[in-house]
Length: 593
Image 1 (cartoon, one colour):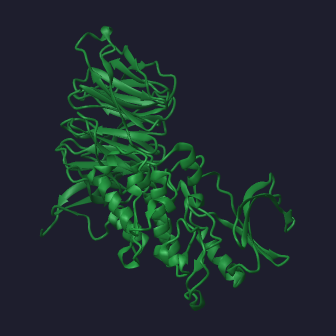
Image 2: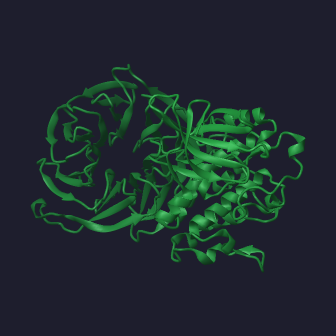
Image 3: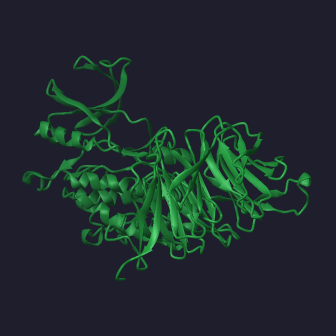
């Protein structure tokens, strides 16, 4: 069937009482472009004021997590909406193929979708059919790490700006997921939040919501049906917090339920605090921005402070390494030699050597005193994304997209050994402050801990063997950092979360939620009390390690954060960004405090 001479219906993919949904192609484009067409019968409520409702849906489609409304029209007493096709898999299919979701995945769903729910309700619209089938996980995921979940099918949506729509309506939506008031024809904004809660407990249990509700006692019993009975979230305090959030989403009584998506986000601790930037009578502010000329400083990839804190090293997309004098706030040297973008930089503990890693598959060692190259380390078969020195400065670890970690003798430049086991690309490596443990993070969603089990000479290695594997992130793990005492490991992920792990036991301590995009950089302050994180959401956040609470958000970059570093001797944080700048954040005492 061809509509308007260009929209060819391919197959029906959904059917309601008054609406049919078709996969289609727009033959008016070359080559033809996939799209989705919804056909409404004259009896559907959208036929009343069709133009106005279509305009509302067009406004909603401006959100990246709602399909764009391409056009609308009526033909032969039928009404049609043509929408963007979203490539991906709906959550009902995902749970069927991959099994029940874990705690981290549920946190991610809430963090990803709640801003969309607020966007919808702010425009006086109730979706009225939130369920796993109407939430699509994009394939492939967005490179930015956010907006991977898309809410589709607004055929049941209700606009509540007109008085006649505030009266009772027909029961609409899916009975398994509909809120009690919605089944009585009295849907409100909080009805969508209820349906989101039901969706979450279905994903956790993979059991029909009808079977998760005890009619005799008028309560949900979903916790009795958890697929993973030993899931740590049942004991973990942060996960207990998630249980409370789900319980409040699922309250039958409207007055006891969350009223808005913003209220849920506040309970989750993912809404930024805008009142002030105070921190124990102190104020963090951007004291200086290093920009340079376009030819001098391009997109910043990595940062490292000299051990005495007077020099900052930065790496960029222009293949060079920059050294900055922090006292004079000026560029003092530029090191060249890599053939592709430099992605990691690290000073040796004594400050005499600088190590750099590049997409050109090499690592280079440089003399700081002479600014001359010492040697080039060859061996990786793919881009090298991270380098780290051991505590004594004798070993250099490198992580590569060839899925391996290599250990190098800094004195001779010889390869000591290769650590294998990750199934996908290795993004980050870090030594514990004592040098006994090496951590590696990978796209395979795991962190591996490698232990130095020998004091033997390098030639008798492998000197590091696998101690354990940490799992829990829902997406790729991008960065790792040890606390100064080596007892805590922080990990940042594409799932927008930070996790704190107890190194000795491998147990998850807490999950930090607050960033809205991928967490790509982490660093502890010298006292170990504060964790700093950098994200593609353009912000730097500070967290109290002992309570897992967000302290402050530092904003100012106009593009994604790509790197952070903490000055070891001064109250100073450096952040690098794709906006081609480095910002220096200084802690200063407030006047009159």
